[in-house]
Length: 184
Image (cartoon, rainbow, N blue to C red):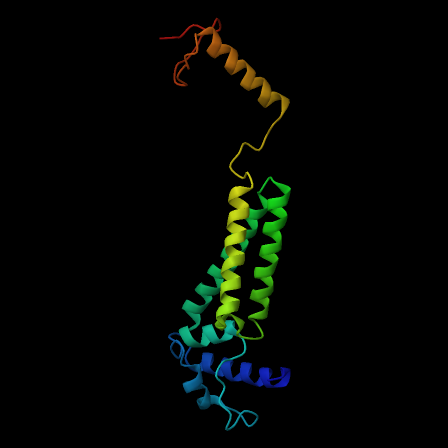
């Protein structure tokens, strides 16, 4: 259907949300319940979907659960972007951002259609999410982020202390006086 038809179906979906705000109409019940609110434009035509997966979700599961699901989706997308942006390796970060942009495009397209109901599109979305996760994990995110002169100096001093003690590592809880002797 065109944009005019989508506006009508979206309005009908909003009417379903108004009539069943808390519990919704039930999962996968849109096709059976949408004739209750059909207008003159869609009279006699069966709307299998709302052509907006977000509105359809809100209508099917109700506003409280639907809003929670949408917030989790937004939080998941934000978390993926955060993981990818923390990646220190430029190649992994670039691939992760590209995969995240693909996920964003799919999420935006869901607002005007129901593309994830096609298995190939759903598989693509999962593959892009996995690429984002791998880019954030493999790209050196867990390595120390600061390599300053001060940090290197601390490492050199720690190595010298170990060498003076014959390779033994001093427990952190042991306090030392100004001459390096253990206190107490």
